[in-house]
View 1: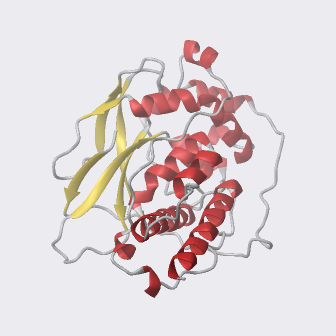
View 2: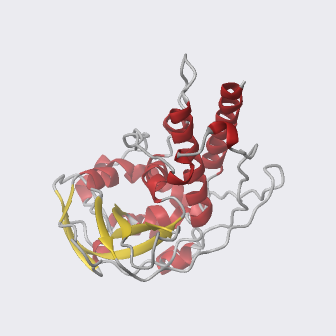
Amino acid sequence: MIARLHATSFPKPACAAATWCSPTARRRIPSSRSRCPNVQRLFTKHCSARKARLMRASRVPLAPKPAIINDAETDSPLRTLQLPRTLLTPQMHEVEMALVDPELKGVTPEYVRERLSLFASEMLAGLSSLKAQAPKSLLPNEMDVSISNAAGVCPTHMLAVYSSRPTTTSTSPRKVTLFPTHQLVLAAHCANLPALPASSATHTSGTSATVPVVPLCLPAPEAFPLLQSYLYTKNTENLSSVLFPSTSTPLDKVALQRHMGLIHGLWADACALGVVDEALYEVIQASWRRLVAAVEASRS
């Protein structure tokens, strides 16, 4: 469920600064095989006993390909663009799980991310079957939501995503897009994610809940659906095909510009949120290299 509305103003969360390092010098996130029963208790808050028996570790397909165009690049002729050769991988700082939930103290975020794959199908079923009444003007603090799929897991929060780019005038309405989400998925992957308020949906396995609405400022809101889908599925093959598909014929300039905005927007959002996922940045870098090569070929 994705809803759109216009609001004249709302609280703007603080933006975290990204730090950078070269691909060869970036710090590797330490791995761990630790296990903790608290993790399972947290997960079962979201699932009934019947759902828990149905959990499986198989990967699920990436969400449908979004139509994303970076407005800042759309009108620029390709021959005048100065593309960077690479998109730098940010220096990744690990998530502190105790700040996400006190019950996760001592549990490595890597383990939490591994376990989340068991719940991907149920959580995505909750997102795809969500029903909610979108606000028509002002952004509310909470929203009543429900899911029609009894096998799904109800989202815990509603993100009100908007662009960090300034509006044309101080009185211009700002576009806001609502995205339902499960707190643990974002919190376990995003070191720079602002603290999310408590949600009643975290402690229930029902099909309806009242969830907090959280404003989230991002450099490329258009790319957020793709980023969130990847964090649920971890399907690098599908992500690569969406960012820059393999074709037998060269892409035209409009298509190249579209993929340019998509790749750069995904990278910018991941950096802003502090996403901890080396595979994601590897796919982004590989797709960008293919894009740069295609742009150079189109100029010759």
